Image 1 (cartoon, rainbow, N blue to C red):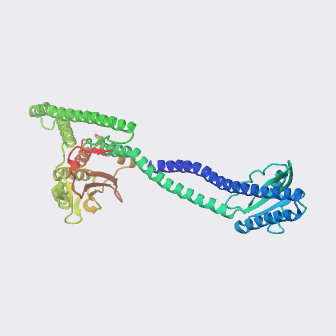
Image 2 (image 1 turned 180 degrees about the vertical axis):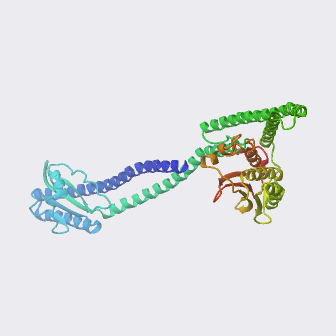
Length: 481
């Protein structure tokens, strides 16, 4: 879920930062250009005042004084151009007429484009409009014009034509600072997104872990709702209540099965005793008595298996470091007489010693049930092989038989209570042996799995952990959010 939620948050945060960054970059560029334009307006206004002084002098003063004023204007324009690299000039209304003064010498107002528009606006008695925005990747120039007014009439126009290199450099530098800020903010946003998704999803992961624990038989798993959104904390509390109710119902079910099995054993034993006494009064080989006796023994076996299953699901495992290979070899030796009686080969293959953590009694009972099941369904002349091996953090005991095996649908149901394959109904059993085996193994952290054996038969794999149990596994398991 985090892999789906985190990219979404990052994309949203990136969109917000970009939505803020682009207008900020545009505002910075507009501010830099406006600052340059204001400076040029001040410059043109100063030159317009000087030009007005020149025109006033040429109209009412002696020729020498007028020439002196004109020389002053030209000197100011040249010094301005040399200092700032900005072209400037004072032009008469007829732009084709030689200008009053210009710098550099020979510069004229452009006949087209922004310069022509600014000149026409100044002739109309208005200051030219702000030029279009110049961006860092453009090679444009800024043209600003101001009218020279005498007696209410526009007699000349001051025009400045500025390079934009420095301005574009300042804009680009500002954009780099904005970009660095955006990157830093994005890194902070990604870190915040990681923390946020972790905070939101941590209770979900804990709930998933606790649910898996309960599904695999560890009914004491609970969730400590200490953090996370309020909705998920309420969900955690509801989950704990549900787990308590489920555990209580299962405990009642186990107690009922155990009590019912125990209470039925006494009347069933009395009934079997009466059947035996009745059989003494009837001729030997009486078919009905033999059938009743067989059904009674079968019922007693089912009650014993139910009691064993209830005890296996209820009792805690006594885990200890065990030589799994030695235990498997010992159980094979114990079942050899049964295998020889059925003319079935039975042998242990594998290393002489492999240690793992298991309840020796529970593991022996589980292995007995699996070997017994294998010998039942393996025909005469076939072979049953028991092996043990270390597999990473677990130890595996494999029991492979040469029987008829099971189909895929039957493999999915094997181990269910009271389930038996329809093809094997003539084989004795209650259908509870493998359920008891699974309960015995689950109590100690072990598992049992089933798969086809090549070329035929069934392969049963029992696994137990190689590492010791933690203290948390011995008590009520509480996972904190």
